[in-house]
Image (cartoon, rainbow, N blue to C red; front, side, top):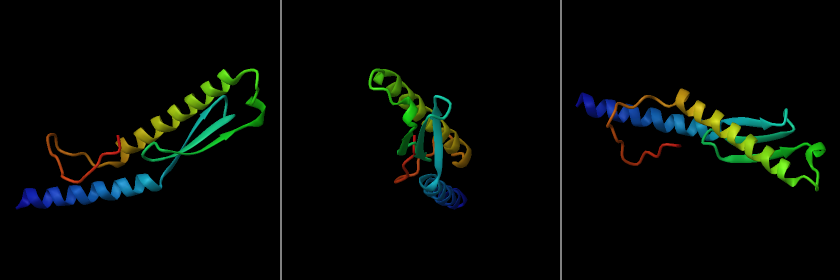
Length: 102
């Protein structure tokens, strides 16, 4: 019975952590902050902001690279939040119906 209670507590803690991650906003940047990407704690992009000074029709490749870097930065920060906030699950323990964010 103790194992079952622990599993139920773990499931509840993980569900709470996932809900918190959904509400969390992380910001990734590139080009010294000229491109900013906001994502939730699951790494899903919510908003992209681009400073007008980096919009050059003759150098679209650079802008694409900056956006890619900013997205990767936001997702890296989201993954770090997951590691920090999610309770540690004992190895081999699988809780049905629980979806891990990454």
